[in-house]
Amino acid sequence: MRRFERLEKLISKEKTDLLKNKSVLVLGIGGVGGYVVESLARSNIGKLIIVDGDIVDETNINRQIIALESTIGKKKVDVFKDRLIDINKDIEVITIDKFIDDTNIDELFNYDIDYFVDACDTINTKKLVIKNCIDKNINLISSMGTGNRMDPSKLEITTLDKTNNDPIAKILRKYVRDEHINKKIKVLCSTEIPMKVDGVGSNSFVPCSAGLLITSDIIKDLIK
Image 1 (tube, rainbow, N blue to C red):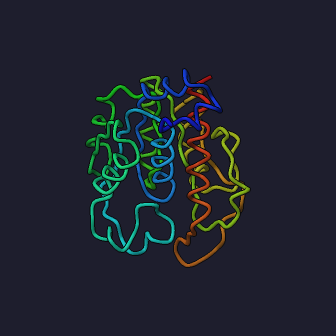
Image 2 (image 1 turned 90 degrees about the vertical axis):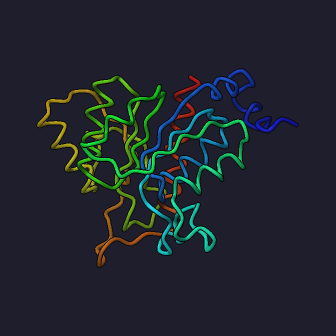
């Protein structure tokens, strides 16, 4: 049996082979982004560019797929690269072990990218990603907040202008208005009102569900 034979039964061998020639960049490989990376690799995406300047922390264990006792303290991009090659020996993995801001954002666009997934937590970086992807006509899907939420059924793929109950989306909506950006920005968002807790709470089922929804949308878009 072929490695991706079960996927071929759903979308055809021709389209499964097409995915092998696609390149996706994922910025932020934590709770949401980690499941995007994992599921893209298991969908025969041929090239993954993974970007994160963090290490695995014990507090990540409740929600991040690479967070294990054995990986605590290790660089996330290094742990994930080993895992991805273990999933698919033919995959090309490029790692960028950096926190992205206005001083180095240009580095992300030195690659031929079919899709850009923004799963980072930093508002200013999200703004930079939106601007650059629009200017360079790169397919983008940006994850809004998944913290302090308990209902994965309230997650949806929509556009930024249609979001509600999300503090991150509210800030970004103002940004695109102020910048006179008219293009629709595809986002992953929850309609659930965030719980009011001390700091940011998380669980094992909302972030991962968000990541899988993002991959589902990307795969459907790439093979249409």
